[in-house]
Length: 331
Image 1: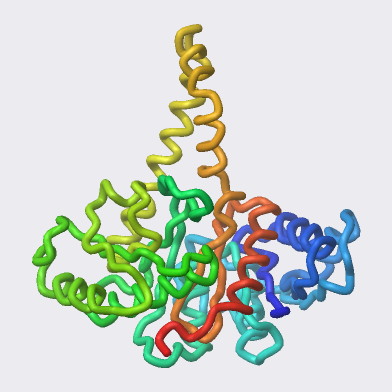
Image 2 (image 1 turned 135 degrees about the vertical axis):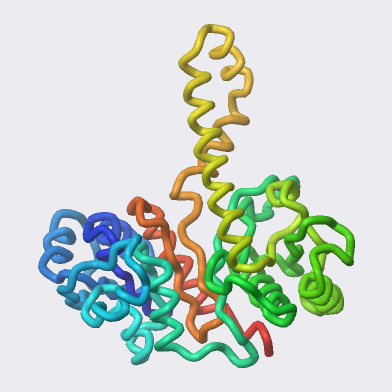
């Protein structure tokens, strides 16, 4: 079972969610976890809950956590004893197999890039993310993967091809999709759309083995469930991800507002019934667990800074699964 280092301080300095999530996990799993952060605070938090001490170690990292808004270069300059830096070093030294952090994602990516080798054949690491999509097939993962969402602003055709290969390997490992469907985010479905880079990326993905290339995807097709993996440049992926988060928040607000309106609104909501109930979990942090940074020998998992204990516990399980089952996608 892989050893997972957990950045217990995140970017807010509150060890509670990480400790609670790991403590609960220790009672139901044999996953070995190293909680990294202010040791005294972690120990106090553990003593307030039930946990299995055989599955949890603590490593002190007394420095203040890296704020989510802090510039990566500045964070790197002062971070030698931050919980994130110490967790990264654990993996670098072989004391842990991978890590989970709900802190500064950009700083995490830069630290990994500085400390870890890229996988053979990989030119650029990709920050990936998951997003909800419609699924008709029983058992298919309701979350799709999109990469890159911010690490590589502009990409070559070769880089986009590598993202497709890595993303499909991750989908096989995590979602258990034997032949993942991969789509290229573009402005039109035509093969010649989007300029020379996207045209060449389309050609390479179309001729690849190991996954099903579904062609170019337009923006409105993202949540339709046509692809398990969506490939794009980091600039575009970051914009798309934030737009999806914004639209999801609006949908939740409208649902709540409708429920508080007149009786006709409430009757309509009642008729929607289980359909609404099925959609609510898709916008909760618990449904997301975490998302990977792909391209390194290890696969770190990052979480939203506001993730609750249950999401962080799920992220540790995801990290252990990926650390155990994720092979060499470009072999």
